[in-house]
Image (cartoon, helix red, strand yellow):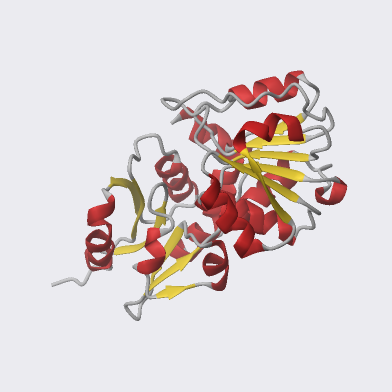
Length: 279
């Protein structure tokens, strides 16, 4: 009998998951670099998450991406949590180690910054305050990354106040919490505006924060990438702002995970964007 090596498998796990472009991205890289492997979407309810995660390594999976609504719950399932994921309080990447342990990491923040550096090379983090809309797992990764690159003040607006207050408690004095209804009144001197909510996503409620007072010199980015040009980005660009869509963050956050799972560090370039958009 011939002993064939297992083909490595990876997945993106969420609920829902049909909108994810991650399968198209990883499948493109596997083909581009001539690597064996498969990457699939898995829709799983929160009540079944732990059982699924424990099963995957036995089926030949080497890792997984974790997305809404599981990014925070996964920390209680993993055996090892990196310092970065622990600080953020959420994970987006799992590595199924050869010793049998499940390691949780968070590459959202590094992907977020890499996207801005690539697509807005003149962005100056220290130029002024940032406003972050939302206070979930993605927002926590963005806040940690903005603090790390030197943003002087971060204003948080979330539709429910307690999650925003918890974020300030965890990240310190640079974070200031404001009521959601006041968001539009706080944009005059904002140098970086980030939407981390699902508002404006296909199938979700519209983005309704007023941009009348938006600083025209601000950089505006939306983590939503379906549609690619959200209403926020369209309006901000019309006001003279530099805008960066959310697809680049998806591409860049995937790089370290792909390298760890499949052994090659992939490149994020225009061909990668086109392949994912065409899927």
